[in-house]
Image 1 (cartoon, rainbow, N blue to C red):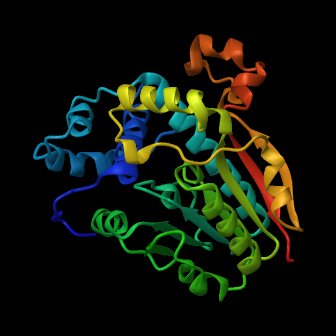
Image 2 (cartoon, helix red, strand yellow):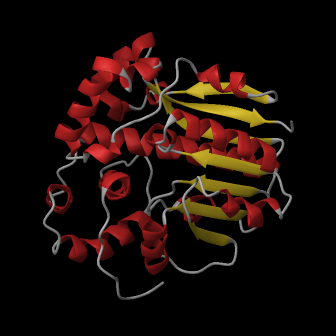
Image 3 (cartoon, helix red, strand yellow):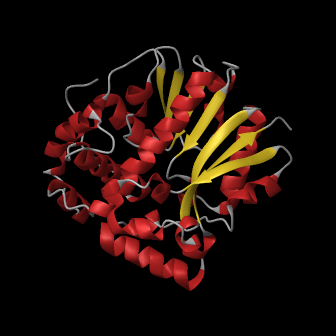
Length: 289
């Protein structure tokens, strides 16, 4: 961990990492937090001085902690669920491998570390460069600064030949469909009998007129840039099974299922199909082909 930070200059999809980080910190510091994360709070404290130098709308919003409370709740409920997926995997495979695709500034390793696993955080080079400055170096914690579509990042992980869990929290919707398909098939080939847990968006919220409205709303509410718009959606969670033999859909989850009190009145919609299928997490087994 470096005590001095280079200038934080993230944009587009990378900018969402800062929004997610601050949303998690706000909720972590709240009364009766959904997920207490001291490490996240420490990162925000170190990044705050950098945001004082930035003049973007996003930086101003983060400085003022002006983030929609619904977003902070959603993000932390989702983070806790992905932690639960990881912990369940580690119960079966204590020395297994976890790959956190599009990790951003998440600190999952420190929340779930069992002292035996190998954990790989993957994101774009600028993001990983910043993360290396913020977090301490630990032998079993590996930071890889590459595009998820640059498949040679898989080489060192596949060589371990260990049971593998792949997490893609808030990633696939930012990639074109053909790129997601190629990625999933490559993961299946390189990590046979692994599990994939990923967040997905319904294609109705990505394509056509409805998709445009959703994109405009996201930009207005969260000051997101146009290059962070969603690009990929599915019709149903089992769509991946049609991409190749051996891809098995296991289960899906959406955040209202947690029934957490902080969701508030929105909990009355948890049984509505339109909400259940708008954005959700799916779990798959990637068998050998």
